[in-house]
Amino acid sequence: MKELTTILIVLLMMFGLMACSGNETDAANVLIIEGNKLSAEGTRLSETAETKKKELEKSGSAFKDEETRKKAIEFQKKELIPLLDLIKEKYLQAGDKFEAASNLKIQEKFKDYLEIKAADFRKRAEYVEQQKAFPKALAESKTEAEYQKKSVVESEKLRNLQKEAQDLIQKAEKIKAENPGSFKSAQT
Image 1 (tube, rainbow, N blue to C red):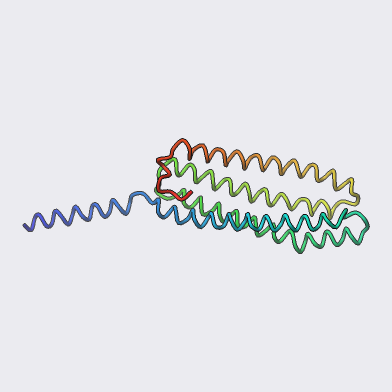
Image 2: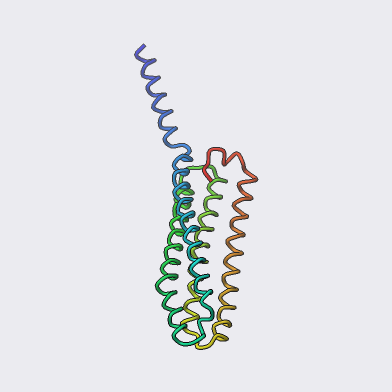
């Protein structure tokens, strides 16, 4: 009887150790939920930034006169750039959460998906950082034509970053669609 009890205790301990060293999907899900909240906050702040940009555009050309130009530059410095910095930070933090989740013991395809999502959030942060080139171009430009020329170049950079982010999203969604079993208990 003593031997049987000892064997049962050893077996229970082994099962306990296996459970502790096994799949960490629940822990990954917690990180994903946190990352998604940060991403949602970044998106909400992005909408606020777009509203502020439209306010500035409503006032007409920043090149009407020097005073209007200075006001536009000041508005961007005080209102827009700090907001863009905050948005960028939210996306970087979301990327960190997804990366941390990908480093846990989870199914391989789920891990791949999370790594791509982390890269997507970092690409979004890069996109937001690139948006700060427009206020800089305005401050450096002496004429509207000069500003427009710089804006064309910066807009192309933004389009490229947006395409890269979209490619990452599609790649992640493809993994998710092709491997539904890897995502049954996951919070994606």
